[in-house]
Image (tube, rainbow, N blue to C red; front, side, top):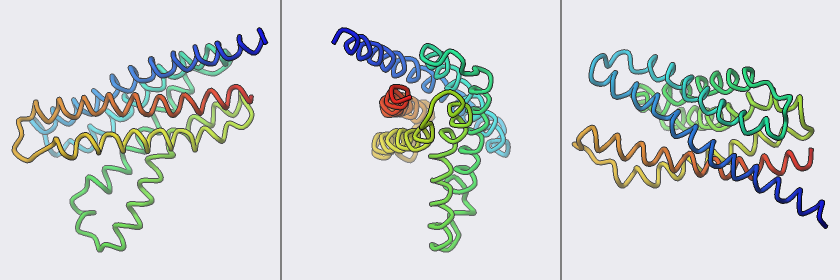
Length: 210
């Protein structure tokens, strides 16, 4: 019983650290694309897409760094640099998929059938990209790591759902830029917490089984 209690305590402590630090990491990471969007809109609108892609790498890398620092407390052999670079690269893929579809005026003028097909594909890429990239490292250290792909997809789906639920009624045409930014940053923090809770629960299960 004492051993079982020790395992439960270790899992709970890991989960608490994961949710706390990963929430901070993603919240800070979101400032990179938010800043890129504000700067490009004010100074150089044509550069918005490439700046957002670059900022996406910064967001992903920062998220990956906060994640792997916690992960190493359970899996000491996990490679920090590899995890961070894989996460940054995956974020670039996700941002590119989103910018070429949902944020593209050209895509919005496509026929409905083409929008539905490409939109579904882009959504799948956005949800799966980070989990798949991180799985390339995680599978080297724990069995059943493939579940991380589905777990991160679920985490991002919940997080993005929270973001839309918050921003849709609050973002209104004609708002001051600072109001729009404040709403976006607040919603981004909620994304981070929701995603961290879901992925933390999945990861604890994977690590415990491993």
